[in-house]
Amino acid sequence: MGYDFEFQGEPHAVHPVHQAGRGRLSIEGRAFAAELFPGLVPGEHFLEIDGRQERIFIATQGDVHFIHWRGRVHRVSAINALERARRAADPSGGADVLQAPMPGTVVEVAVSAGDAVTAGQLLMTIESMKLQTAITAEADGVVGEVCVRAGDTFDQGDALVRLASGEDSDEGEEA
Picture 1 (cartoon, helix red, strand yellow):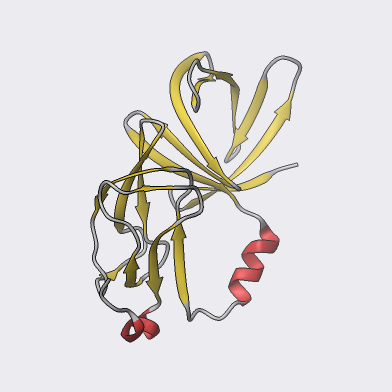
Picture 2 (picture 1 turned 90 degrees about the horizontal axis):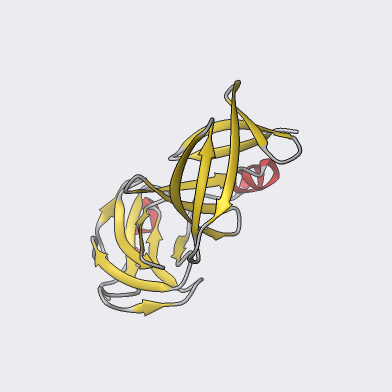
């Protein structure tokens, strides 16, 4: 059985090959020996791929995994074909609420209400478990509301930013 994953906005096919003691992954047709070991602190792991071990931190919300590796945070999500089809069938209008993937603290806010943003643009940086994560716009739009300020703490699922599509931009108000 294979899985479709999205890594940094690019789709990839991943096929796990189950073996006793170790796993193998086939990513875009290239096979890798892979094993994930728990670390000593929450979120810490050691990933060994083809005999090379690297320290990573992982935070998960639903099917989205935030992986801190080599000084960068990577967003990896499993692509559910049924969910993708449902989203494609939804009308594109309306506000999107970007929610906190985990509890934490706002480090920096990079936008204000009324700002036009493009997909992938940095909206804010948050910190959870000593791991900084970039919160980015999932689509082009206009910032309707910034729900938190630098230094604020929040819980998992709390609203961080509300975005309106381009058609809804006149609905956004200054917070």
